[in-house]
Image (tube, rainbow, N blue to C red):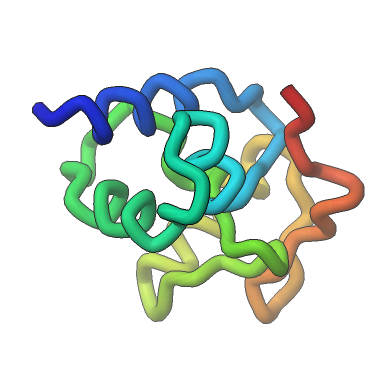
Length: 100
């Protein structure tokens, strides 16, 4: 596994239950500001049974960036943790954003 992925996973592992953050914030905290899209690519390659809380990462507007079944899966996982998700897949970042 490459160093970039290791650092991304380390940041995501720290996101507490019931909180969310953005791809850009993860990249910045990992030491790679401006690499939000790369964070998304790394997460898209995770196996379905991963224990990493990938679902706590959203786009900068607090929107789930996935579509179809993946959007539903991410929304359900967030709701299980008490995060309110609108029908369109949006989360109120000002309420649920993780502030490390």
